[in-house]
Amino acid sequence: MDVEQARQGLAAIVGEEHVLTSRAERAVYCYDASVFRGRDLLAVVFPETATQVSQIVRWCHQHRVPYIARGTGTAISGGAIPTHGGIVIELARMNRVLEIDLDNQAAVVEPGVINQDLKELLAAHGYGYTYVPDPGSQVVSTIGGNVATNAGGMHCLKYGITSNHILGLEVVLPGGDIVEVGGKVVDQPGADLTGLLVGSEGTLGIVTKIVVRLLRLPEAVVTQLALFKSVEDAASAVSAIIAAGILPAALELLDRAIMRVIDQAIHVGYPEQAGAALIIELDGLRDDMPRTVDRVAEICKAHDVISIETAQDAEASARLWLSRRAAFGAMARLAPHCYIVDGCVPRTKLPEALRQVIAIGKRYGLSIVNLAHAGDGNLHPGIPFNKFRPEETAKVLQAGREILEVCVALGGSITGEHGVGIEKQNEMLLMFSATDLEVMRRLKRAHDPEDLCNPKKIFPLSLFSDAA
Image (cartoon, rainbow, N blue to C red; front, side, top):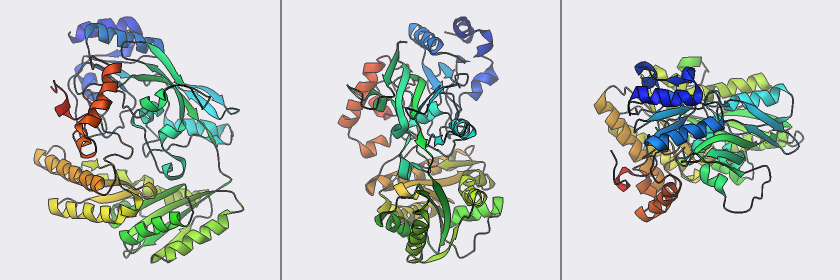
């Protein structure tokens, strides 16, 4: 099939104005926020309803055309790029909040709703509820994309990841059937199909409607910034805080390298002797908060804290959080591109993991900076580089693989929230046997026997008979 045939077929479903086929337009959708690039596309199509998505999927299966659903392209594992050409089904027009149901603590949204927009809508109406998942890309990433990768975020330590906040889905399956799984009633009979689909990275179908859980806003929220002499001291304090029975809403760790870059960008004023920072957010009952704040300060002091600052109001809290939220943007000062590694270790292994990450960086001559959702052991080493230099890119990717090997060796995982995509599909063999992976692939084949729905993702290429 050629581009013109694809344009005509898709335009009959969504209208001419909602199909992109120029060379430049198609090229833009061959990328996401990862270091990878997809193959040339036939078209990009913008449906507005689940029915249109179903018709597009049926058209793809009729003509054996690969397809992939896409949100805003913030994925950094390559899961949102068209590795086998075909068409991109862009869900940006499906961006409505369909229902706010406070009685059942739920909302119904379309996949193109921006994560932060839902939070702001709830806040603007003064409902006293929020949607908790907050990936670092929340101001631009869609809830549909968060569902695809089972995104985490800074508050997943206390509140869990995306899968803990998804009650039900409407999904267009390969072949075009529209099904609903889960719902507002929590205890659903039968297999947990919602759990199966969340985190499947768009390989089992296209989500067209999402029932999300809403939670009450806490009575009080307090943010603290603790500075330590070393990463080891900061990581030890993390374990001690949780061992004391305190469960912060967020525990974010920054090492000296990233603190220096952030300081250059937004002039935080970190002292030179600080080797690491912890951003600690506590929430809960107002009456209990002073005692908890004091107890956290005591624990940090027992681990050689240099200083600990407690924000006195919302503005001061936002200032403390700015250093974390500005981190990846600030790395643009170091190089044109940045490879963000996503791995997990048990939090007690965090000091050892970070030591080995630093050693890997020195061995490869790379300037690795370290951030972590420290409370749940989710590492995000950042490696600045120039992807237009092939030898440099190869070195960076190899260093990333070795970091994941360290994570698995320490009892962790190759991903904490970014998904597998194409970035880590071969690293799946670090965690799973060929038999384990074959069981997973049977699910994919049962749903999509022709492998047209986001094909050749997640699983090692060696397991595909045709990996081209």
